[in-house]
Image 1: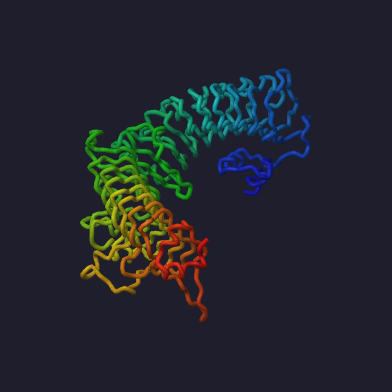
Image 2: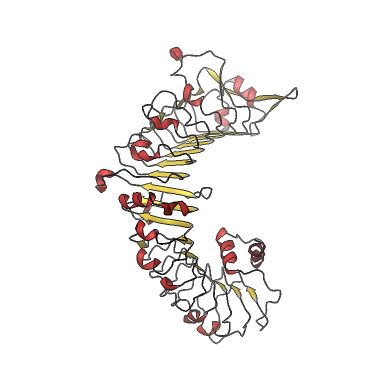
Length: 511
């Protein structure tokens, strides 16, 4: 661990160091930066990050036999001559990230001691020389090279390769089977739309694989077979796409670094794809995204029946599903099986009516901390009193651009549809409330008060018909009364239309 963090010293103080950089240093064992920046024989490590180097003379060939680390990141470098690497054969770590270079010099093929080659975010790169001789190579990072069409020759026979990233190489075209041949010890694999014909049986050959990112399955049956295999349980991190659409078209998918087990279901339809079996999900999935589901889908279990019983599912993001009306049906037993759900995001659901058709949501919202709803034009009431009573751990509520929304909390499911004027509905842990562009919102909590004693920030923008703020947020601790609210973000013209009681109560927090 100490060696890993010492490697960070090679980067400038304000450099944005990613987790990938740390991994590269860890694997390649690069630990410090030299004090002497001259090209001398005793140099061991050189960092020239962000030095505005655009050219290297074609006859320049530094004699640095002990040089092990060379960082040329973030330079406008167009060309590196072959002679440059002629006398630095001891090099172990080489980084040329974020350079406009088109071709790497062929002399890189002779750096037989190289353990890490990082050439990422080079948008014009079209050529990487053969790597067959680099038998000590452990890290090869070619992430985000938009022009690269072919993987380097010899990559499939590197016996010590542990880390390989070909993510976001949009023009790349390579067979997955051909790629992994010989990579029996690979531990970290990042791929993308350029890697074709992924099959579960080939994945299972990678017995040391621990992290898999950007893996795209177009065949549901094959994905299901893989999910049933023991191999998936050896993965500490995975990111699967199940879609008949190529991954580079998944522009609406959300990558969340907080979760290690991720699945994106995109444009999946049994009828269209001719599938005879429902999609299965891994039992340890943490983050599920459902994008462009079939128009016949009315609830989440309709789209993915296997979502029931997932005990580790912490976040669900649903977007662009035009048929979806509710997240759960009251007739579905799955509503009681989402106790692990912490965050729910709903976006661009043109027919969305509510979280639950009717009834009590069991424990589905019991641990929910964040709810975001946007661009759902047909929903009229977000919560019923019964549903909101189950969301007592909610901390963040964001609702925006829902033109049909009239009530945030409705009392339609209470006896006789009415409660007293001073009845209280509690959201005891709510910290942030954001209501933006809700042109028909009339009330937040009809005929009652909303108890949110830990509220810190309230944002209300473009809600012209909202005339009352029914918040109760005073706390009494140790015999003293105080208010948690620190900030309100509102429009001045709207503020002046509020009833006098609401203005007087909140004027101290109005910024």
